[in-house]
Image (cartoon, rainbow, N blue to C red):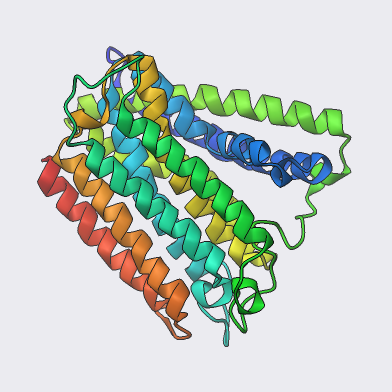
Length: 354
C-alpha cells in the first residue's frame, strides 16, 4: 500500500476504523445474546472463546503484522492498546453517569474481583518486561518461554477470576458497602437490544458477519496505518501505540458506556481489565507466525509503554481499594491521575521513540 497517495490511505484507515467500531459493537451484542442462550461464559473454555471474540481487531492486526514481518507495529499496538484502553475507563467515569450526587466509577464498581483482574494485568506486564531481556535465539518449536508463561498466567488468572466470581471468603463476597449491585463475573441484567428478539441462527449470522468484517478491517487498519506512518515519518511503535490503538478501542468505549448506563459498572471495568490481560497473549500468536522471538526485539519505547500501562492499572487498583467518593473535573480522583499520567506518558513516548 506504500505506493498509494496519502489521502487515499487516510480514507482507507478511517473507513476501516468505522467498520471496526460498528462491527465490534455488533459482535459484542451478538456475543451477549449467544452467551445468554448458550451459557458460554459459565464454562472455562467458553471464557476463552469470549476473550478471543471480543479482541478480534487486535488479533487481526497482530496476525497481519506478523505475516508481513512488521512486528514493530504489532508490539506497539498491543502495549499501547493496554495503556489506551485503561484510559477508556477515564471516559467511562466522566461520561457514563453524570449529575449531582453521582459517585466516581471505582466507588460504584469496587470489588475484590476487579482488584484481582487488575493484578493479573500487572503480572502479565511484568513477564513482558522480563521477556524483553531474554536472548533472541531462545526459540523452541516456534515459541519462547516468555510468551508461553504469559499465556499460562492469563489462563491461571482467568480461572482465578471465574472462581472468585462464584465465591470469596470475605464479607459480602468481596464487594464493598454502597457499591453497585452486581454478581462478579456476570451481567446483572442483559442489555435488551434488538438482537434479543432475533432467532439464534440469525444471531449466529450477525456474529459471523461481524467477526469477518472486524478481521478484514483490522488487516486494512494495519496495512494502511503502516503506510501512513511511513509517509509522515512516524515510527511504527508510535503510530501503533496511539492512532492505531485508539481505532481498535472504539468498540470498548461504546459498549462500556452502554454497560454503565444500564448499571453494570463492574462489568465495564471488568471488560477493560480482561481485555488488557488478554492482549499480551497475542505475543504468542506473533511468535508462532513469525518464528522469531518477539519480546527480545522490544526497544526502549516498548518497555516504556509496558511500564506506563502497569502504572495506570495500579492507579485504578488503589482507587478500587480506597474508593474515592469525590469527583474532580467531572471524574474520580483516580481517573484524573490516570489522565494526567497518560498525557505525560505520551509526551515522554515521543521523546523516547523520537
